[in-house]
Length: 497
Image 1 (cartoon, one colour):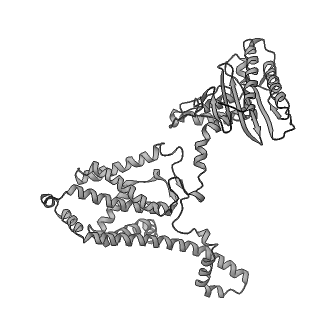
Image 2: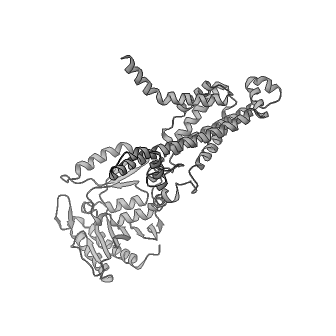
């Protein structure tokens, strides 16, 4: 990686301080230490390393500010730039002879970390990153972990020492996480833990009570390594560009997409199951649909993170927009003119009009949805009626009435069954897409194919096979009973009790 002059300066300072610390690490038992807090030691090596880094950095960049763990902060002549340094992250490990400690150096520019170095002298691993240049471990570009299942992940944390105010809550968090992952490690060096997350060795890290010098360099390395994908997803603003996969088209086109998607899936299911007996076919269809739902619900290849989509655009106006539209306000005032004329006070009349506009907007949106629904139903009814009385429809009725005779006449009965199955599924796909846009919420994990398939069967049975008008009537009858079941039951309870 070709770094800037500042990054090269940081790497040089880290290596010089690393040589000094490595020499002291070999004689760790002879180090003079002073206790500055319970469990928080400051060694002579720590202070010497910070002095080395400060001299290297400030000698070359005298106008920059300074924030270090072991010395007072310095406000530089250039208020936009500041070094943030932890000369020895993992002091306790160092003093106990454990070879897991590091040097952390970060450069802040206008309150943003732009360059970072984390150096592990024990392994000679140099983690470096710079804004716009990526993140590297020596000569290898860093990649975060690609593990997809929580049970396979390993996390890192730092457990506070006894008496720390964060000890109780940290142990509680640890207890919550342990049963859900493959393990949690506490290595005692936050900067290295963060670097290991960026390198894919750990899947995540958390710790309470950290200071800026503990995390400044590590956070930048992780952000540069993992954030491009996150930023690409979060940069999509539905209010401006639509949702991922929408191609910027009106939401009503999703109904057509839903029809094609359901028809395509029906083709696959039909090819697999249509050779079965009718009762086996029904069972196979339901089981395959449940498998599809399980895949959508659990497979992470669909999306890294939440699969539900909320806030979908509407094919009809929003109530809040209607309430601020002049033509709609005038329409409500015209419809309620007699009621408003009875109010003499101007303020009261305006308040009453505002309330009527709010109520009217809700009614108007419901009427718009009802209008769209009727348009779709009427269009489907016209098409199905024409199909029913066409030569193809007469052939299908003949197959329905006597499959054996149709087979004997050379008709491909299985093929025609598949075609009907595909067409029916396409209609169900349109209905499902309409329901999603009405709710403004796509939650595939909550769908229940068996329940809705049963409803469709009941609608067809009530309406009668081959009777399009009866099928629609049956659908409305079942829908009405479905939504009114609870109120009817409550009415009967109150009536007889």
